[in-house]
Image (cartoon, rainbow, N blue to C red; front, side):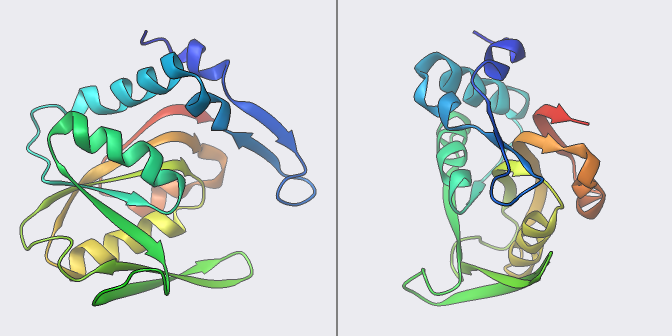
Length: 175
């Protein structure tokens, strides 16, 4: 099943979460439904088949859920990017701006080899802060960004602009 309308049926709107005035797009029902989850992974992976991606990088936490099966379908390795203090070995980090402050992401120093072609996968593209921090992490290790794959893009937040010139693929876009 490769119909975007089927995926839309499994996205729940949650008003005023995580704070008042925000309409949160909850994708957990999509993950709970086997057909919808498989379709989302297949649709995300299909345009990237045969592109020689070495590593899919999944961003904590829901990027793990979508990134790992995409890596499997592409025959690529899978790399975790985690919030500071959660990885056990030598790591490098990137700090990025939030609406009210900063946050830090980390990756193991041996997670991406120089020259690796990397796809960055996450559930939602909003402002682009997390994704742009991932660019810094990958490039600091000598990898090259092949592109981004998101389930949902909140286009009205202009996150895609921060990721240029890298290709961005989103299954569902909310204007």
